[in-house]
Image (cartoon, rainbow, N blue to C red; front, side, top):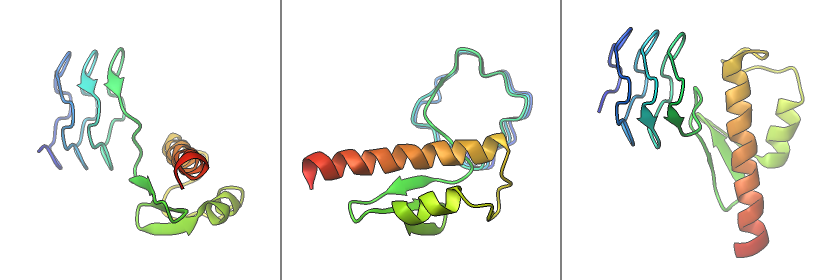
Amino acid sequence: DLRGADLRGADLRGAILEDAILRDAILEGADLEGADLRGAILEGADLEGADLRDAILSTYSKWRVSWGTDGFVRIGCKRATTTEWDKWFSSDETYQTERGTAEFERIEADYQHAKRMYEIWFKYES
């Protein structure tokens, strides 16, 4: 559990960090070249300037994104239907993350993934 750890500039080349809890860790400028980060919880982690060449990553963004079989998607502490989220993402409204940033795009990509997972579940398993 490396929650909140200050790993600024650390040499983590080739490290196996699979399923590590790195929530809010400071990895700014860390060398993560070739590191295995599959399943690592990177919520809130600062990866600015980190060397991620050849790293193995799961999707990550500032906020955890999850979906439920009830058709709701949760992004951080906000919960809405996919219709409501689609409307919100196409608007100019912001919560805590500025639009037009890499972080916002990662959140939106995680949302699109959650939405698609719900659609697949609904099509085949509901």
